[in-house]
Image (cartoon, rainbow, N blue to C red; front, side, top):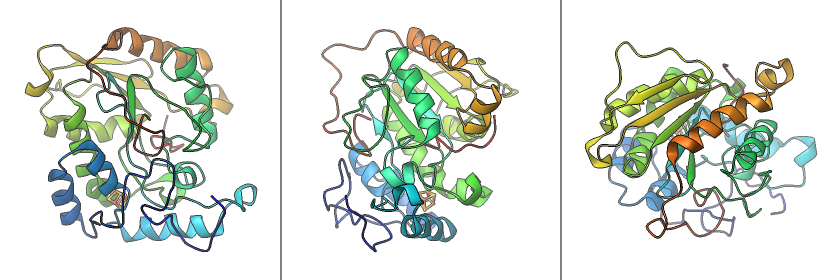
Length: 301
Ligand code: SF4
């Protein structure tokens, strides 16, 4: 889409996979986030509501400023400039959780981990391990697909300096709680990308009904935690896996290597088991909400 002077893509104007319409209700306060998340009847409607949220004034201002100023390399592109909703299968066996979208990644492309260096590393690894159809993820209409996975973020808007405040994290949590609850019947493995995602997940998992160990295990690359599943998920255990974030800081310094990422995602794939046949319905399209960055924020290990 050619750049305009609009600070965000208006809902329902043709962005690939835009889940919202002009009639999608907009949350303007933390209380409205809670109400609209809890009352979202479907995953698609939840994504639509996520994608138009305006409950955090500082983050709304930042994401729209970035969308208007743009980076020189993307000066001719329209930026998404809205919250980045969950993306991927509606019935995933693998759930990948990051922190928040990158200013010129997800905030530009409208799809999580898409269009930035962290995403380059992440999708290359997912492709090598059979979890993504393409080795790259560059824009919302590129045909990328996660056959059996879903990606979400603990905070849906790009934060200044990649650091949401504690209040902003709390305000955004109901979106994640509802999304995790809606996919919980199918999820067998959860991968937390980075320590912030690991920390942000605990209250969500508890709220959704997972039984979590005490004391809570410390984050580390390759750390595995068995979770008691919520009632809706049946008796099969669910495994939480820690994975260092593929931020430039981590990849440049060698803290994270391709082999390390591949090891975690190979383990996740093996724990998740083969995709279900027949019972799983792929989500149409390939845009922000459908089959398939904060998950991309380059902070923390
Ligand atoms: S961070 Fe979350 S709660 Fe805050 S404006 Fe963005 S989507 Fe809404």
